[in-house]
Image (cartoon, rainbow, N blue to C red; front, side, top):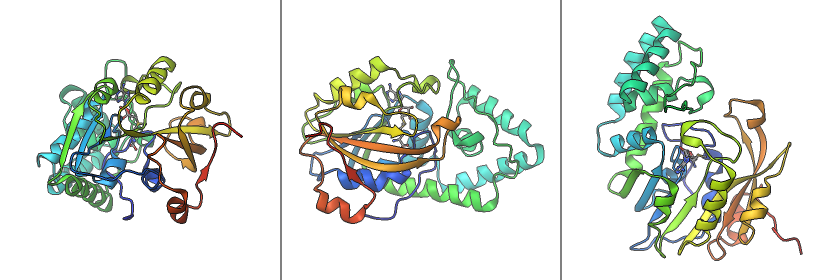
Length: 303
Ligand SMILES: C[S@@+](CC[C@H](N)C(=O)[O-])C[C@H]1O[C@@H](n2cnc3c(N)ncnc32)[C@H](O)[C@@H]1O
């Protein structure tokens, strides 16, 4: 597998470190009419690294989708991002927090994708949070010197990489609820799901509760194609009983992971992450263990 790269947008639960684990455990061969479907796209790090020929990439967060559509149609590119971040980074350096809040107000009024990028890369803790009216409400990271030249270059390169990964491919970015996205799955497709965490309400785009999680489990397990679901299994405080309750007929692969992004202490720290895979769509362990020694396999029903 190629070295994992990071897309330009960050979000809670970003799977950067888990991409090798996820992609090496999924057994899916791209064929003529196959398609990779991600109903909870987030940063897009899984799809961008896999770079399938055809993909349906959806999220309810219109800002994420709009941002990637703008890269896809060439309205946002490396040079534009460089210029924009240089200009706005200089203003941030000069005026500090007040400029961050000026951009935040502007974004909440006009929803420009470049302002979205600016806020995403200079907000507190790299979280993406919106209030009940859909307004971005994360405070400033308190570093007026945030957009140093090396940081701007890094972000511009990430934009360029995202553009290259989707160039010439049949990818559709769409604002959609997972219900609608799953309706499009066909037998030769593959669906990768990374839903928000139950009980961790993080605002407008991430309202997620037990009932929704249960419905997702039910509908996913009726899909006519292969699928894999990412879900936290346990941390030092608790175990995710939802897996045993709703996803127990699947193959489960487990990986230890450390979360850095999180607004509260209990959202950070060591976590066991599960990948629940439809039987018949998981890679053989010989294949996967060679590259990922930290991975373990746990039976859901101890024999
Ligand atoms: C855990 S994040 C996905 C992270 C992603 N796999 C990554 O590595 O960056 C969950 C995503 O689901 C989206 N989401 C929340 N509720 C949704 C819904 N009902 N339908 C579709 N997407 C939803 C959120 O906006 C968020 O981007």
